[in-house]
Image (cartoon, rainbow, N blue to C red):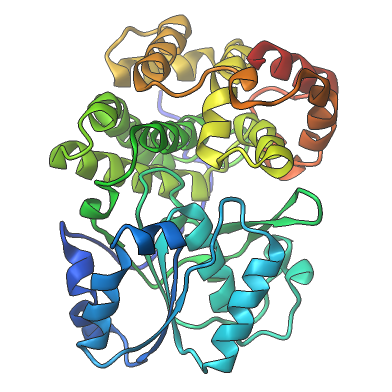
Length: 382
């Protein structure tokens, strides 16, 4: 006997284009889609130094765009960098925002596109559905296969001494996303591993979410996990492998669409203090916390983990799924212990207390997580 489909809503960006070397044709592509020509390009100095940004700017300028370059993005971007970007964009009368980079660059681009014309403060936007008004047209090009920020309605900024502020709003969905896997070819193996595992965490947590799990996110999460698991090791060890890079980028985007509608849980909640307090990259933070949380959730998510084991082709039970994920992490070369990335043991209690502030995420976890549980999970990861 079939069950009734529970009510759900699924939202995503209106347009995604996948094209190898597509960034080199960005000006031509955007000319056909947008009338605006005064562009802000948000990126980081590393991509500028690597020569990734210059041909993109050239392609835009050759098609009549004026380009203001903002390349001050750092990992876990602090609020003052965001506001500097907004102020420069306002002064230049920017009318279209382009984000090029990893999740940090894309998140700043998303929030800048809203803040340019808004009277709201960032603090007033924090939380779910608090943004009022519209935004400047927004284009996103990811250069890592990980965060899925290009297709999510979420942006994260570091405030104060290390607290992370999250904005969740439909205005954060971009107008146009370009997936050019050629942009990911220069990504080092360690970053390829961390961002790829981050994307797999998105798929897993979307599939096992407690409240908003839905059939569309399920399909996307399963396909994302299939693509990512089959190509992670190849991409880490042969970074110029085009099929692997394309599969990783597509997998990360599918996982992003999945978790934008079926939000993530305890892995992310426990990862945030690693970034906020110790500036560990987001993808690596998730990689470090994944296995302890999988084991913690196994009793409640046993059936779902079994289904994901079938996606990986390793069996039909939770133990096989977790073992396969351990093998993927080991094979990727990503650090496995908190001590390996310089986190002191005496910081674990404050991290556990900090993680409890992530109620937006913890509520989605298959199992309730107390502060004592969080501390035990950090100790297991240590």
